[in-house]
Length: 98
Figure 1: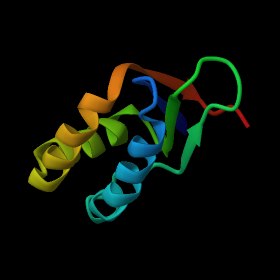
Figure 2: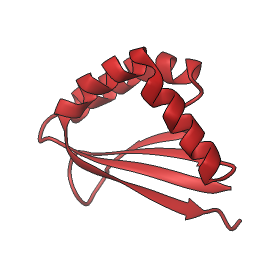
Figure 3: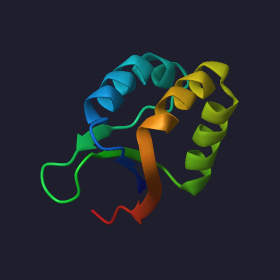
Figure 4: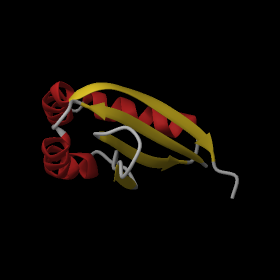
């Protein structure tokens, strides 16, 4: 099993808007089976951080899920609304040991 963390640094003051947009996008993500297990926001440290955590059996399952999302027109439209809210982002991939 692997854990994938998509970490987004949101623009100043855009966290509430990003969380609202995330809630709107849940149904799309559920329908294409690209639903994160957890959504986190920062409590301390850097401000306006949004983290999506998802577990997969392996990297190939993650790639298939991403490919399905990227091809879905509804997801593409949703993502274009999200992009202006983010300054940057990165992905972390971890092996789950226990």
